[in-house]
Length: 257
Image (cartoon, rainbow, N blue to C red; front, side, top):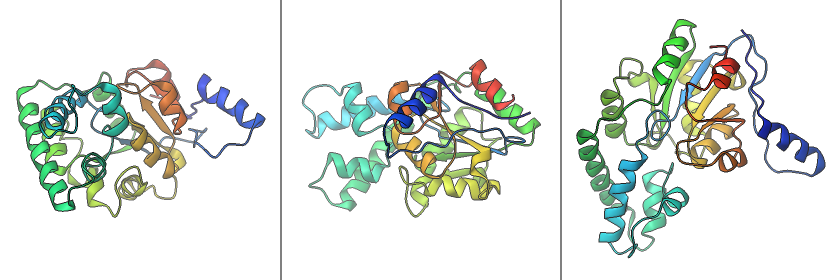
């Protein structure tokens, strides 16, 4: 099986690149003997957890006076989605100290876990089948997330996916030297999969611009999951293919699954 992904969007961008200089160079899933590793973002990619984060942030931002009107999805996508708590709270509360940011983030994440315990969160469509196919073909898998470890472990447990992702297969961005949108978490994911020398033979799945930038910066061909962002937005930051979910026939064909 050979891997090759090239979407209409990517082909249009290639035509544009020939016509004018560009500063972006997106890695593309090119023909390879076989896929060696698949790296998955968690929130918004493996499960649609963003609505729970949205509700928690809406309450927080209005209670603390950052917003007087209800939180909008546009504001959420531009200022919150995919970022690390350190970056998010520094942006939202520039006058507060790092210690205050950390305390607020911990309280917010505790509220998220309380909401998570009340919800019947489900894996994204096609995810479990893709994980099984990866295991059957010897493709290594790892979760790469900016979520705090307590959140990530709680989500994977509720999704019934902890069996796939033990501690060595779970990379927490804030436990790396730099979190997303820097490439460090994905570089660590490649290291744990034993494929640091071949990022081009791997694939990453992301739903946010910050996460996609991190994966692209690690030279991993990146597939955008259209759970909240537009195809245009994710293509702009380097995703070479965008799909609604993991059951996409075009995705499965491209990955040889």
